Amino acid sequence: MEVIAKTSEVKNVLTEHRSKGESIGFVPTMGALHRGHISLVEKAVSDNNIVVVSIFVNPTQFNDTTDLKNYPRTPDRDMKILEKSGVHYIYMPSEQEIYPDPDTRVFDFGKLDKVMEGEHRPGHFNGVAQVVSKLFDIVEPHRAYFGQKDFQQLAIIRQLVKLLNLKIEIVPCPIVRENDGLAMSSRNLLLEPSIRQSAPLIFKTLSDARNKGVELSVKELISWVVTTINKDNNLTVEYFSLADSITLQPILNWNDSESIIGCIAVRAGKIRLIDNAYFK
Image (cartoon, rainbow, N blue to C red; front, side):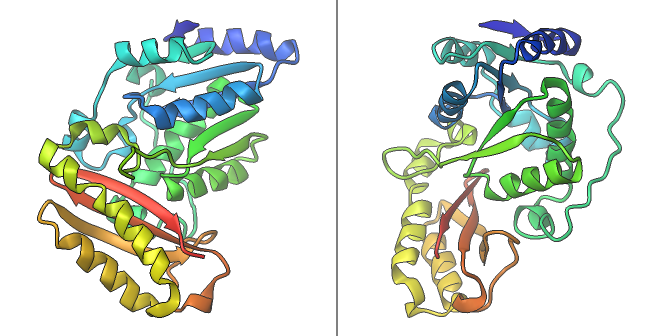
């Protein structure tokens, strides 16, 4: 495994692999790695000859400067984890390396980025698109791997690939959960112990809501989920949306879509957690 900080170096070494006909798998991360990330890496290792993992906390996707400042950074631990995982290259650039000049590009994702995360985190997905498009240009992977916990981000990345006409296969990977059901996230490291005990209620409520099915109307079920989670003093629902899993547009009735995803964001103390589950 080799750690590379310079863009020119990583481009050169990957060009050499590409010239040999070797396939390149890419896992972009912001570090603070957990088993969810490693599941992406393992899938990439099984699918490709060469695997690249990037570690870069991207400033342009944070609309909250405090969130950016507090985002967990554990580079030494991350490298030790990746050493055992079959990764060939870690690309760990500086901010100057990714943004030698300000990135003023604005992407048009139609309605995809106007709901849920896009509504509550203005500019977030444009920042994601900026950094991912740059990383794709640098690595030029055959396949790139993203977790389904960030369901809306996955939809945005797929649309980005279409917009830029890139020949990259986007590979979605299932959510990895703690034993108590909490979706794995780098932000879990920041949860205070008492709040960490409350956090599994998020997925438990989603699971219970799925079991309720069409007993309740869409509006009634949304209200039930929000009320159930908000009863815990450590948790506050920011939004819960039942939406078409392709367009991400909210549904009003159960027959509005053949595939329905429930996406949720919850404030757990000072930390913001997201999760999702299919309802149909």
